Amino acid sequence: MRTLLTTLHSKYIHASLALPYLAVFCQHDCGELLVREYTVHEPKETVLARIVETQPDVVAFSVYLWNRVATLELVSCLKLIDPQIKIVLGGPEISFEEDDFVTRHPVDALICGEGELPLRHLLRAWQGDEQPELFSGLRLASAPTANGRSLLDDLDQLPSPFAAGLVDLSRGLVYYESSRGCPYDCSFCMSALDDQVRSFSLSRIFADLQLLIDAEVPQIKFVDRTFNYSNQRSREIFTFILQQNRSSHFHFEIGAHLLDEETLQLLETVPADMFQFEIGVQSTLPETLQKIGRRASLEKLAENVRRLREMDNIHLHLDLIAGLPGESYSQFLQSLDWTAQLKPQHLQVEPVKLLPGAPLRQQSEELGLEYDPNPPYSILRSADISYAELEMLRGISRLLDLLVNSGRFNFLLPLLTKRFNGLAACLEDIDRYWRDENLYQGPKPLRETYLLMYEYLQRRVAADEIEPYREALARDCAHHERVVGGSEPPFFNLDLSEEEQVLVRRRVKLEVAQLERSGKIQFFAASFNHLPETSGRTILLYLYRSKSKKRLRVKEVLLN
Image (cartoon, rainbow, N blue to C red; front, side, top):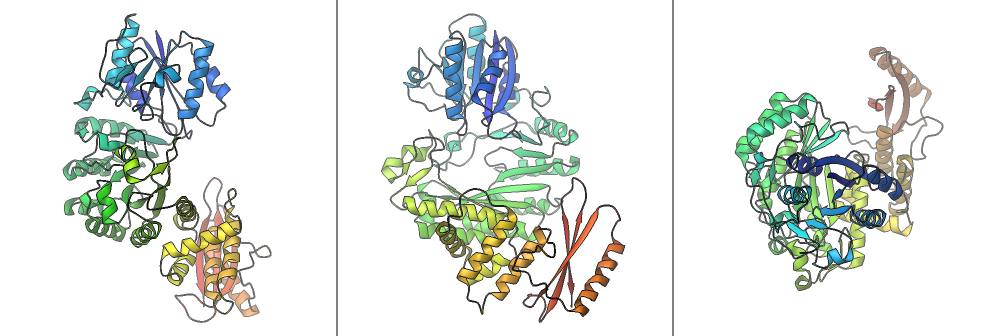
């Protein structure tokens, strides 16, 4: 019997962790196992043909938000091509289906919750040409009623898929799991259903990490729901990484409020940009946090985030969730301002998703939450926030990425934020302009974005007040675009005197003499009158240095 374990990723760079886990756990007495990974961007006909080419007896799909529709289309086609192929579906998108799912879709079995134990039980039965007996976490077409879940109490029973060579390490990003479960029960999260936190042994974690570090995997992303649920455990893993790492970067989802003094002192020693922390704030409204069962001290979270920002060696990614029960549009904007004042490198806003099986979905009628019945199950409106207001927050979320998280408007945004007495009101006004001008249609090149922001300034700021904003925008542009005289955007002032031009040429000659000769060097100079670090007229010189296959390097030189 040949079983194909497969899934459709949202991006090629993603490499499955679930499929290698299943393959290594089911390697004995389950027949031949193949792992094949595709993406949702490949034509259905291409993926279908590649699956059929493997001549499988069983096809087991791992199903997620982003691939549910495409996966079910493949399932329908496979059964029409060969009715003898057995179809198994598992993953978070399948674990909470109604009993009639197996009559609406041609599947033979559903794996609910953690898949290792029930899938091995199923495949061993089929390999022995037997009818599978009932087993926790396994639902059959002949017995579709929900049947609980099976959990591995000792995660070390699960052989390492990394040591077995089953995980593709060539894609630049590898997911790693050091624990399962979460100590918290936030109602919007699937992890609320598994409060039994289990960790691999430290010896197993260290062995896996050493293998990934030695392979110089560029990005290792821990998928633990709350990595630092134990400060002692997290310190030991941090210490191992700091002692052994060569060039890898590590991403962790942490509870910032849990960090203790000893851990914070250890984190001060982390080399710049080696670690990234994703921290869920979600809301700052006490009533909302209570309704979703989120137990975390905002005061401690803010204190520790400020401490991490002072260190300035760890990239901080903070999350907010829009549409949670009890939080209105204006209250969410207050949460946005509160979080923005912590100055994370990345601030993400997403609408709440009412995931199948999550407690919040079960409470949706009681709480007055209306949501899209199709993936990704985003909220549409509630008793506290309208669809129109959620749509405005979606625009603000896009502007956060475009203007704030990109780091390309670091001179202009502080001025606008001060003008509007907060980032939220600033982005709200830009969102209104973006919508009035229909600017959300399609992606925008960086140069066009700068030009659009200049048009926005001309519409919103009086002529006798605009100069500091114009110069801040020009400075942002010069830092992130190679500006060439003669084709510069209209917000630059190139009116330099002969004396200033001589000063520029002398400084360029000096700077070039100090640089390595390899690569290409260009320069651009403009005049400014409202720089915060000087008074009066100042010339800023920009040196652009580029090398083949390397990012543009920009140096700003202030000439008085």
